[in-house]
Image (cartoon, rainbow, N blue to C red; front, side, top):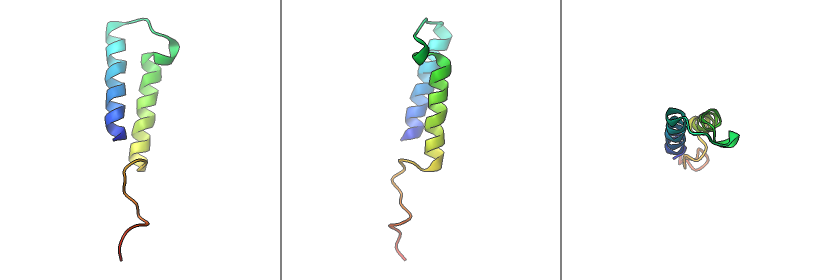
Length: 58
């Protein structure tokens, strides 16, 4: 799920960059790219995946 959110953030950053829209510093393409990378890092780390090693049956 976090990977989908990262993809949406990357698309928004691409649109802002392609149109050269003037936005606040918080919503600039670079800050959105960093947010997308953070979401991808959380996805790769397994955060929000719904799987738990503790609940595995033996």
